[in-house]
Length: 498
Image (cartoon, rainbow, N blue to C red; front, top):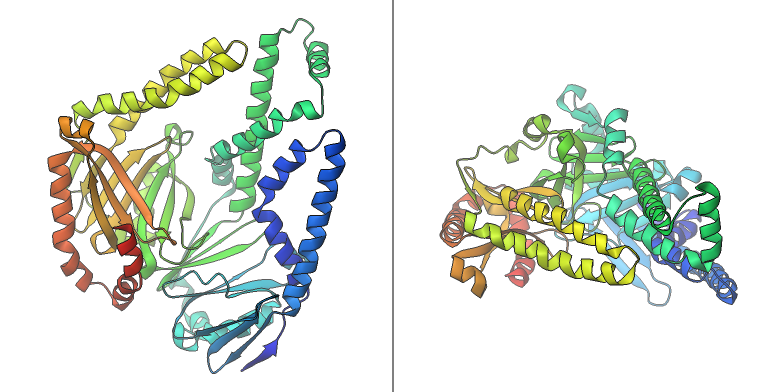
């Protein structure tokens, strides 16, 4: 029994902080865009007013939020303008996550998020309570749904496997992070507004004072270097903050993933909810022989059941042994592999031309020395050729493996009985060359996840489609009750994808 009560008052600040963090990039852009002249004061007042409004809203939300546990059922009443009541029974609860964000750690509190089968239960979150109350709440709700905490503590420690990311690998992961592209776009937007703060004459004087014989070309080169350097630093710092003290604990029926420097996040992924496994080789990591492992899960993960990093950095020789130890169901021996035929190479090269030429023309016509942007055709064509070489489909006993590349190389492993749908697409140009696009969909989040290999031989694509379709029913019969429940719960999502 857990009587009706409110959260700690720090929940008001935590809710306001969550909204600000979710819109941080937008706020940052507004600061830079409106940081000159009269607009600066208006922007400052707008930001301060918005923060005060969110804080007041958070206080009212905290006061209107109450929760209790009665007879194994979590009951939540919330809503500022409209009163909502949420009831979650213990037999439907799959995962109970306990985490601590920046605000919670300041006050010695934790947040509890309850997730039910077949959905991501975003509303079932208690933002700020003491750890003692959180553990008591968890024990009450897990009496039927999961093993009790006492039973877990009684398990021999040798039966659990724990994998941690050491400092060296964390630094390598941060240095080669795929977040660099996102950071580069943000820094690029910020630098585009630098004239609001510093005039062009001041910038030229600053550069000439550092490099007396500098030219416009050297100033442009220095600006590009500065943007790249600052973006890399942002990417490096954000990766360190996110994956600091990264630990994966393998339990009997689930994976427990803990990470974070300022915000300590704990994610629970049941084995029977894993839909696919991805090996991601980032553009900077692949030459060094490193990759990351990513899970696709239904209803669980970092963002409403979307991709979850299983391990941020592994040496290539360690990948499959790690998979065998942590998620042995996805250890696959390849029995057949089909690459893109040579006649598909031209399509990969032309695709990169259609993408790069418009960008080059814009740069050429808009900035000084833009004519040198034509040199970008060389890496673009090389990327197209590498995309052609990497693309392919393979299969094992009950698993299909799709390999493809945009910038990063991705190898996706999907079980037959996890596949939601299989799709073959062919446009008139592909039809003439007897090629097609082969796509496999799995359940992940609200929209699902699709893996596509372009320009595969049409005969091979049809063969794989028949193989996937013929074996699904018999394979799914061997799955456990959780697997069958998942297929039933996600049928609406499957129909929408098909």
